[in-house]
Image 1 (cartoon, rainbow, N blue to C red):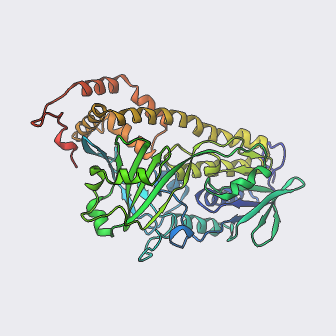
Image 2 (cartoon, rainbow, N blue to C red; image 1 turned 90 degrees about the vertical axis):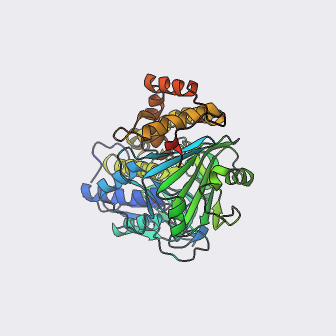
Image 3 (tube, one colour; image 1 turned 30 degrees about the vertical axis):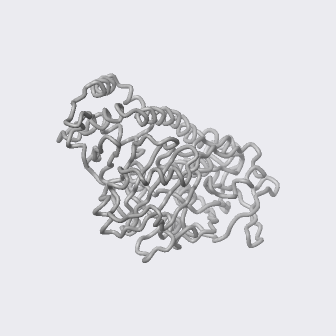
Length: 457
């Protein structure tokens, strides 16, 4: 069955599709294209190449990610009928705690729900004492196989063409030809270096480096120290744009984002009293269970498609600093829908897939502006104090989440487009309250400006 109104190559009965990369983007694509093909009455074969075993702990099974499932993604998965087992979602986040040098404030979900999940991408950190949590990536990979995809535990080492059809060669020496090639390898994959041979017009995304560390605390200590909250830090530390500590099963995950993140910056952050204050007594920053320094996508790829080839997930585009798994979902669904119902030509992907990538890239421009403003607040103590005071006063209200609280919640969680967050920050009511809060000083006995007691955690 040809795609309706398609010009150029299309999928048909017997078509073969290769997905390179079995992480969330690749697994989501496998699920979506098989569901769409069934709806369209097409019988196609889907092979998903993934060399890692997500059942393994440490680097062998890990996809180097903080492992946060945003509110919109949780809602989308529920709509798709994709259920995550209880052993995959290790903790439901019901609040964020913003820590600064002038006080802390707990920001509760505006909807009073726990719809943010934390997960391991593999079976857990290196040296895990007991594997009792499931892997998100393993669950999604197996879900795609349950729908009819074939999982191939092998690595692609060469891309090319056999006439008009894409060709891949795996590490075992086997060469295979396909009607459609879907690249879902992520920006940390060495396969990115091979891709210009496949599509010379493709230019990989711009990336930035992050640092992630896992600390074993034990489930009881994690609950006592961190609770069901993600902890965000707004500290005046050079080169640091974003820092978070995430409760995850038996572990605390520390994530840092910024320019030229390195071990020295991580040590500076971990030695801050705001960090020491929430970690257990006796905790030592040197007692690392697992760590990595992955790249993240900070600017979309150029031309992530051509005839019979499409790039999805991180190697195409992603949301700036937030909701990478949600971006994988969005790009995978748009690409799969395009392939089945509109065709697999460059023109089809340009008309029906590229708008999803373009909208995300456009929204990220507002994200950069928002983070620039956050960086300015981060550098000025009186601004940090004003922000904490405003959020604390709102959190004291029973029935109204408050403009500042909603804006911060969406900024931290990725629950709303950056454009929406940015323009909320330009609202006259917010600007007036922020200006008032910066000018309104209440001297304490020590001579410092007092932060409302409700802001202390």
